Length: 391
Ligand SMILES: [Zn+2]
Ligand SMILES: [Zn+2]
Image (tube, rainbow, N blue to C red):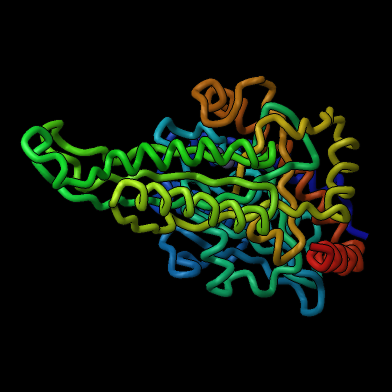
């Protein structure tokens, strides 16, 4: 039997190095697919601890796959790193995700010494803004051998059963006909009126959608001057729903809003998907039970998830439809919500590193559970199969 306490102790021993890593990523915020410094820092940390690191996984420059292979035959456990920032810095605390997953893998490997199986760290770029690093890596076959995968995300509370909505984003480009707005408006067809109709149609749609639905749009392009009937406009919408099936239906309804808007104003519309769509999170109970016990043993206070509060979306949802996965939220000790400057403040410096170390210990201990009882991996897989069949 491998020892959980040993994994936690070894992570504690690496505290200084983990703190440096977590602070470095925070102090060098990089947007999606441009996380050169952050991925290099994670690579260096993992290599110092005996991991083999391959950069450029799945054809993405800032993605990596790191591993410390044991003997053949055991489970392959994946730890998911994120390290992309937002325009206002690390306001989603992904410095903590990167540092905690890497630190967990190192602590786990060092605690176990010799083992059968593989410990894999996946550097998954651009979670924010529909980048979909995890989806791209999965499609490229980088995760084919992973039996199950895990990560923590910082949040105002420590919560086991995270909820993530499925999301897709689209652009709607309307083409009208320009004309002198004063002299001969009847010769024109206004692309601005089409965009206004789109928003009105979408607002009308809200009357007959579920409470968990989210429809949020912007106008990217709204014409140039007032004395020409606008020829070209563009709106973009984020569309969210609880499940993949609900999302697909909702997307078609929003597309129809755009088609109707074009028809009624004599315009045409081009519809294009933006980035990668994300799926809802299917949390795995077998894995969640393990991590819950480990957090409790560590003395963490676990909050109840309020289903109506702070529900976002992530590409970890896409993975959860293919392999047993969990994303658990670790409390940062501040009520601030992600994507705000106050939240970034809570993820900064030694305070942020301390959160990463707490998360790393719980992750490594859950890894020990799986190596001690590989049958749990099979049970987690069976659970996912059942959940996918029920739908
Ligand atoms: Zn975020
Ligand atoms: Zn995030």
